[in-house]
Image (cartoon, rainbow, N blue to C red; front, side):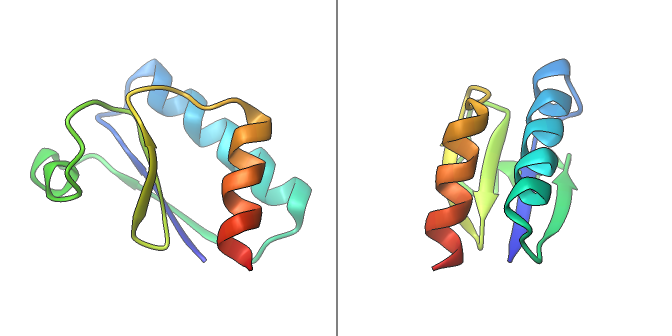
Length: 80
């Protein structure tokens, strides 16, 4: 599973990275987490508001930090 955190490195981006990393560990998933800070790449995903969470090249949330249960739900659904 490839997970990408889209954002310039702001506080919310860092929070999303922490929440996502914790959820991956809790679920015991084999996943790679990448940070994407390049604005052209971010816009390429159609994201106009950061942070954004991309799982297997699908934007699942943008413009806010999802709650830990939401992130676990997104990851569980993507793992099926």
